[in-house]
Length: 336
Image (cartoon, rainbow, N blue to C red; front, top):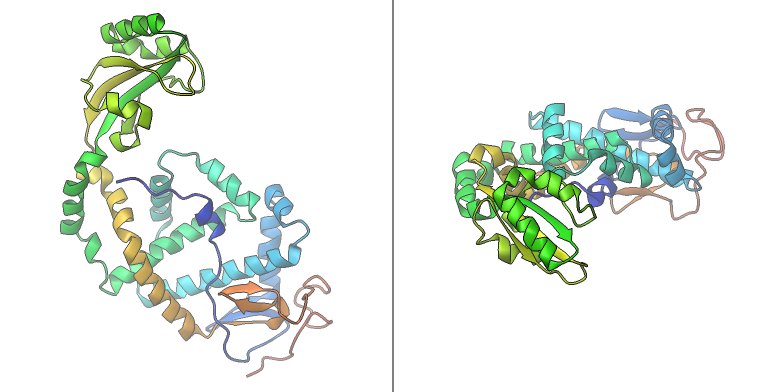
C-alpha cells in the first residue's frame, strides 16, 4: 500500500461543520453547541494563543476578522466531534493521533508539516485535532457497525493482495562523471557493499543518496525501476538518465517484505477511506441534534464555515470581547 500523507490539504481542511438553528444569542457568547457555549472571551483567548506564533500572526495580518471566524469554526468543530465521540462511546488517545500522524508522514519531517500549516494560519494543535477528528470518524462508523473493511479477515486478505507492492529493497544510487568511472564504482560496490557510504561521499550531489536506504519497490524512481526489478541482491548496475549529467550507478541490496503486523496500520488507513465517509455522516447527525447556533455578530454560516455576513463587514474589534455593548453586537439577552 502507498502511504497516504498528511500534507497541506489536511492542514487547510480544518473547517467547522456547523448549522444555524434556534434564536439563542447573547453578546458574551460567540456560539452555542448543544448545552455548551463558546464565549467571546474563550474565542479571543484561542485567537491570541495562535497569534503568539509569528508565522500565524503573519498569515493573519490584514485579515484579523476572517482569522477570528476561522478559529471560531475550529472551536465549534472540536465541540461537535467531542459530542459525537461521547454519543458513540469512542475514544481517540493522544498516542493514537501520534501513531496516525507518523504513518501518514511516512518519514517526512513533521516540523515541516507544522510550519506549512502555520503559514496558512493553523497551529500545531489544529493539525493534531484534525487528525484526531479523522480517527473519530472511523471509530464512530465502527461503533455503528460500518467497520467490516477493518476486521481481521479483511485486513489479512488485503495484505495478501498487496504483498508484491509492499516489498522493499535496499537501494543506493549516485552520479559519477563518466562511464569508465561508473564501471569502476560498480566493481567497488560489488566487491564490498559496506563501502557504499564512503563511495557515495566521493560523488556528492542532489542525485546521490549518501547511504543505502529501504525503498518500496513501487516507489523506486521510474528511470531506475527497470534495472532494479531483476537485479540480484548485492549487485550494482549503471544507467543514463535524461537531464542528469553523468552516469548513474545503482546499488541493489537485500529485498524484504514487511510482515502483516508491521503494515497493519497502513492497511487500516487505506481501508478507512469509506469508513470515514460513513463516520462523517454520523457526525453530521450529531451536529444537527446539537442545534449549533452562531452569534450573528461573528458573521454568517455558508457552506458550513463561519463567513462574513451578507449585510456587510462585521467589525469584531470595535469593542472588548464580552462587554455586551457597542455597534458590533446583534441581539441582546439569551433569546429563544
